[in-house]
Structures are given as structure tokens and as C-alpha cells.
Image (tube, rainbow, N blue to C red; front, side, top):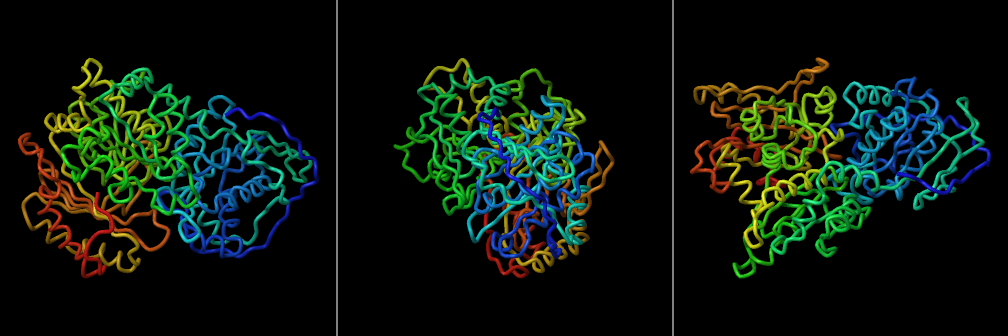
Length: 589
């Protein structure tokens, strides 16, 4: 991310201490703090308080280190522009010597992680972390969601020890420190380095703001990770049609650089690639409900006439607002995130370059499909709570290479975040590998790759029901109801088990409790209830239904048919309709 054009700002800048009142609701969730824009912008010093709490929670050695660097970027959603300029001023007042901020403020969450790691590898470990402005897959706009989170030196999300410290500080905060507003002299649209040479602060008079490319370093990293020549061959096939939807999030610029410029996809095959601060008024969540245009284009629900099949793309993909999530579709076929992880693990020779697949991991709600692959390969599989931060220790200790979550998150140890573009390239690499010697007209399709996988490993039929914006008291009532049914479920049939999922990190021994309610059948089937930690208001109840089918003659059933009995039992146990008043889920995946 080389910046050009040095600019010196020599006007006097002083540091102010501003009295404030604490807020009691600034507890970060699994992916940072998420609130409605009106709650952030409409409450005095709300964002200032939280940003100051971040800096106050950081190790003093990080803030006092000479030449320390902070990275700032985000998904381009509404209010990020205001937040970036506020962060620059508070960072200057709190001991940061240099802020690397992305051009136009646009930097995907995976690209942030990659850049933090690159700076620390190449510049002596000077980057103390990053502030990322994203609410991920949540809607954006004046009446929608704003998000902010902190990532640490390894490029991964802050662990609970730090986020709890941030929250504790926020509850008692009485003042924050901030520099005079110099940000009107910073042009975020151009790659420049600004040096403020006359700042009155104890650490020193110089403060640097460097505007860096949003895409260059990430694209270079992907070219190291994957065989772009093999991918170009796939894209050049006359029997391969590609489609991508950026959902007007930050993924668009990366998609244009990689899929169009590098791999040769027609530019018209990419839609929704202009980042918009309200995501075009849509929900930037790559699933069967919110990515409906791509779903229709790939004809997943088989509504188009048979005569039109030749015009349906062979491979479709989408990313969410900050480009860390992905959805992959084949022609008239949906690849579940759990199957995606299992398939790329089983075919890792197609893309892992210079690495051995030593281990894999999944979040607890993710299906056990990856477990079957790990068993066949003789490698360990780790089951963690939901939240990418739990994979970080496993990666840093060399225990795993690939990991994933059922919530459309997939990644590897190249960074410490899930990575939507990486996941798409990984599956594309599998398709390319399967078609190395396949003549045009006989394309080994996405669907055939997945179905062959089921025949080899069995199929984990899987579905998730999301009940969104449920009042917190009603959501809690559902969870209490499920716990009260544990004994009845265990007595229902021999071998049934029920528990509250807990996790002890095998690396540092840290304990995480109360991570979801599990109803386990002896054949590996299960029902899981969990409250999501990513909503800005209310609660989201997620119910996961899974049935394992080992009989290879029964792996081609419709998911709804295979799961109908388990779904009925789960809804009865949770008493969802009566306790929430919702007759059906908001989203089914």
C-alpha cells in the first residue's frame, strides 16, 4: 500500500480533554459494537467514549512505543466517514504516531487483517492493531446499523479479555482526549502521506496520516495463495460462465481487480460492485434470502424453463458488506457453508501451496461434514464457539490451516479473519483442478463436485432458521424453555444427550461458557439453539437442524424432506410460535 505525495501540515494543533458521561450499553459482541446509527450519532460523545475506551484498554507499551502504527478502514457504510475523522483525532491524542487509513475509507475486514500482518512482518512489528468500521452483513443507512471493532497485532479480532476491559472502562469513563480538528486538511480520496509537524502532545510533535490503497496488497496476497494461471484457464473455457454479486459492499473493488482484471471474467458478470453507504437499500447478507438476485440468476429454485439452462451461470458467488462472508452457488445448486468447508478440505491439494493440511476447525453450530473429512485424512478437528477470534489461537499455534462457520464464513491461516474472496477463489481452484483435462462441453460442475463428495463421505443434511429482531425477553424465554426440556429430550430415546456448550482453549486454557444449547442424537444428528451476538437491536434466535446420512443411496433427498421430523421436534421443544409470536422464520438457509 505505497502512498505517494508527501504533505506537511505545520499549523499548531493542541490536545483537549473533554468531560463526558459514561454509557452502560457499550459491550462489544462477538464482532465488536453494533448500534443503530441514530443511537450513535444522536447521543452526545457516544462514539468518542467508545473509541477512547479502546485506547485506554490497550497495553501502555503499545501506546508509548515510538513509531507505532494503527490501521483504520471499513465497509463504507453510512456514518463511517464521520467516524474515521473522529478516530484520527483521538488516535493523535492518545499516543499513536501514524495512522494508515484506507483510500476513501474502504478496506475489507480480510484486507485489514492481511495488512496488519504485512506491516508487522515487514516493518518491525510496529502495527499495534486496527479499528474496523463495519457491521458486517447488517443493513446500512441513516436508520440502520453502525459497527466498530478492534483487531489486534496478529490481525485477528480482540479476544474477550480485551473486549471486556473496553466495556469495563466505558462504564466508568468521565473524559476523553482529542486533538483539534485537522481532518479538513486530509484528503482520503488520494494516496498521500500527511505529516502534522506541530502537535502539542507529550509524546512528540509529529503525527502522520498515510492514505493507502484499498486493494493492492490484498490482491498481491491472493496471487501468492492461488494459481492464477490455472484459474485463468477455467475462466477462459467456453462452457464456464461466472457470476458475482458484491451486494454494494466493499467486496466490489476487490472483485473487479481479481475476477475481471486478473482472471478475465467479463465485467458485466459482476454486479453490485459499487460500494454504497446504504448498500443500495438492501441487506448485504449473502444468503438465499437477501442475495435473491444472484439466487434467481443461478436458478437455485429451478423456476426457469429447461430450454434456458444453457444461459444459467455455472458458478455464482456473493460477499457481504465487509467481504468476510461468502455464498457459493452452482447452476441450480446451493453449496451450504458447511459443505463448502468440507469440500475444500477434501480437495486442498488444488490450492494449498507449500502447506500441509495439519488440522481444521469449525464453530460449534457448523455441521459435522468437516469432521468426516478430518477423520478420513487422519487430522484433528477442533470445535469452537461462534466467533472468528476463537480460531486465532489455533492458527497461531500451528494446529489448523482451514476453518469455517456455518454463517457463510470460511478462511485459512493466511490471515486471522474469515475471507469471502479467498473462499470463492478456493472453491474456484477446486473446480479448475477437477477440469484440468476435461474437454469443453463436459465441465465438471459445482453440483457434481459436491454430490461426489457426499457419496464418499456421507451427507450432513443441514438447515438454519433465523428469527430476527425478537424482543430480548422473548428470546431469553425460548432459551429457558429449551433448557427446561433437556430431561424430556434425553428420555425420549436411548443415546440422546443435551447440554450447554462450553469451550476450553487448547492453547491458553481460557474458558468460554454458555455458547448455545445442544440436543444431540446418537447418530450425530442434532438441534442447536443459539442467540446471535451480531444484532444491533433486539435479538436473533438461530436454530440449527442437522441429520447425518451415511447411506450413499439416500444423499440426494431435498433438505426440507430429510430434516422435516427433526425440524418439527426442534420447533416443538422451543415453543417458538407461542413464545415469540412469529409463525415462521425471517430467514431459512
